[in-house]
Length: 413
Image 1 (cartoon, rainbow, N blue to C red):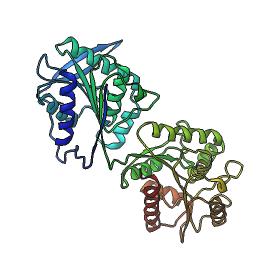
Image 2 (image 1 turned 90 degrees about the vertical axis):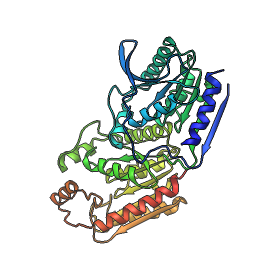
Image 3 (image 1 turned 90 degrees about the horizontal axis):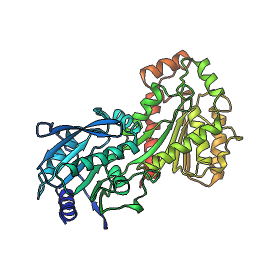
Image 4 (image 1 turned 135 degrees about the horizontal axis):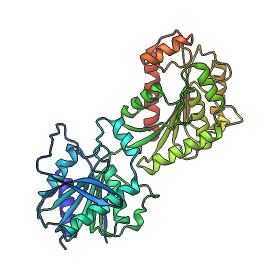
């Protein structure tokens, strides 16, 4: 932390108290505190007007000093970003730090909530908030103003150096904006950027079973996000908000699915992840999603790896002999969905993958039927209602272990 602040302090002192670009690699980043303390009493809360909206902002530091807009991580305006703003305000020669509340008072208390908030962020609107914050500082005593941010805020800091002409300098920590928001080749001010050499934020597109985006697929996405070394998981809603509450309804939804359209949704999801910080992206899915994961490994060239659970696509959609990325597949030996996920389908898939010349693995799990990864209480109960009475958490644990090993191997940056 001291090293990062030393670099940024020197850079901002040079540029705000006077068009270069510099990247600092930090081998052992330690920005997150193990114990976080609330930091609120030193701040003055203000309101800033822009266009037809008003937003809160928090100001700390010397009056008439150079200003720095401090941009939040995906969590929102929490104690961590306030602690950083206070530290910045006390750096020599002294600064006025301002935190715009981009989430309008909302704070993510866990990773899933933070992801939801970031996904819902109006990024062009956030740039307007930053511009209004810069202008507020310049109208209130700061002759020059820099912008800094962390993670999501780092990406916005770089984007602001392209899109906000009033900025005098920017420092970004571990975040790069998507090119459709701002192309860093067009920065208008000096930019300094910091990245951890071991930073491994990579992406996943997690594809639904035939039920839709329900508790089970969300449970799996959360589990994936917490696997080492850490992942960003994205679930595209292929059914556009619909969920099958029983087998008949789920079958109806799957029968009505536009499969080529679903592949386009998956491709767009992969591209979104790559445009939002994930250098490599894998795809995984279960049942219908498993079939789509394999089809995507044929039809979506941007994918870097795939793991499919008990599902094989029809050859008219995608021939698995033509996969473009490494594929791992998992099947229950007692699965009886003929031609889709039974043992014959699994072995047929294995022959096609072998012919592809790409890395592959096909795993059969003795004593288990379809959907054996559904181990949550709700998922297990639903399996029983469908006549799947086998319970083998050991098979699921082994499959997760193999999943983790496969994705770690092929998604490492």
